[in-house]
Amino acid sequence: MKIFPAIDLYEGKAVRLFKGRYDEMTVYSDDPAEIGRDFAGKGAGFIHIVDLEGARDGGTPNFETVCRIKEQSGCFCEIGGGIRSMEVIDSYMAADLDRVILGTAAVTDEAFAKEAVEKYGEKIAIGADLKDGYVAIKGWREKSPLTAMSFCEKMEGMGVRTMIVTDISKDGAMKGTNHQLYEQLSDTFKMQIVASGGVSTIDDVRRLAARGLYGAIIGKAYYTGAIDLAEAIEAARPAETTEVAK
Image (cartoon, rainbow, N blue to C red):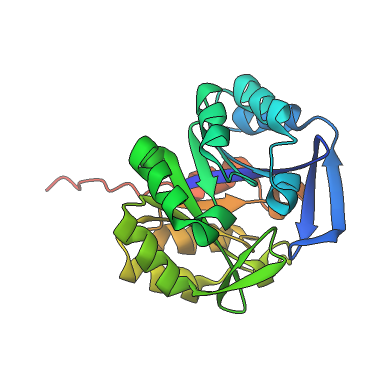
């Protein structure tokens, strides 16, 4: 299983929200690119980046910061938040971002999501942020009528390869992740499922890896020191089997 340490951006700073609330924000660094370099130094090969201002208001106010993280870390970087036009996707792809995540746009403009998947294939991921069982949009402030299962079924039918699924009620709460949800998703769909929200202990990482998930995003647990990144990366590796000489 791949570990994606997260960098959430707001006004060029690395921050974390509590359960998606913009009025409950903690600033962790004025230099997000330095965090990206630190991730790489601890053995990370992947980084999950979210432009929180973009997610809330649209646009790419943290574009230059995103590019610096990619350039200075050398990691596989995926970016989400406010990506609601092909022009924005094209800009990120031209800047060598490895994967772009569609959230609100995939719910409100299915034709756009389909066009993006047809053009860029597996470089497009879809983010499903769940609030009370329904997909939330516009920076988690509104609920759509789509359930997690119905939305994932629609996206898989469209040819989406990777789904990043967040249980908002678990995000930043440091009380564990929704293992039942990810078990159901991995049993139902053939897409690569990434767990997000509440991955707060090494035991969470081990259980998700044992379930066979493609990836897990670690956010607040890294910043508070609850999870050691190098240990999480090691815990997510498939168990090695050794032959016993007969």
